[in-house]
Image (cartoon, rainbow, N blue to C red; front, side, top):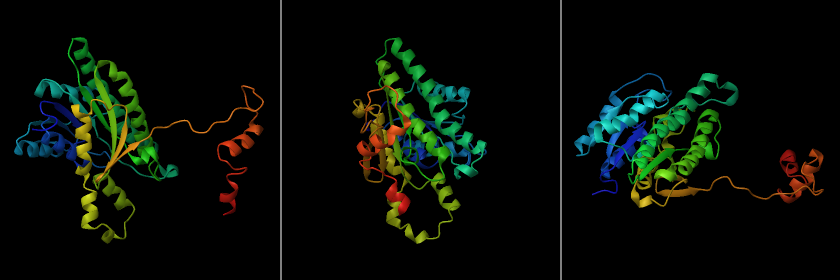
Length: 309
């Protein structure tokens, strides 16, 4: 018995790494799973059906149920077919885990238009497209009188929520997915859809590509214990919980799940504020420094120390 018994899940990008770990965990918790993966490289090049097929075989060998799908998440027809696959194979769907992604790290001044567009296309547009068609099915079922209890779990990253050098494309996409998660939760609430996001951690093909590009010189720094903590499957239990009815009270939230630690990201919120001392609706730009420095930064010149250091 598992916390997802009787449910049907779609996991995109589940042929490798974190997505694979999530698919195996969901199946282990009783879900029937659609394994979606085009089988491309970490940069998004090429296709290979064997990636999805292998995960399906692992799940079946363990007594679970799974089918493969090889559609492109960012193609609207493909995204619609990913969702349709769940209905053709299992008669419906209850969970979508958006995990498909690629990586093309470069500094902003060196990043090409294609590098930027390709990463946003897979991560952000792909998450949107699959969510769109999944939610359309759930809305139709709700309108027909069904008591829908559905869950979207998106994949974000500290690169988008906290920033990371060399990942303007990836970080922008992940920050966008965090916002999309909240909006999905607001819109989906009326017809029984929850949406949350997880920033996972682990050594995967994508992080491996980053380490290779950085020409890591100290492989001994990664001990067996460290690799155990960075197992990409460690984040999967959090995804399974968010997808389950155990978390019916949780929606519109973003979490970090790395190894044994689970943390809750607090969203952008208004902090200290100042009002125009003259009471005018429009500030004089020359007046802003004194007020912001004194009442927001609590300093007459917050940049002075940095400039002179």
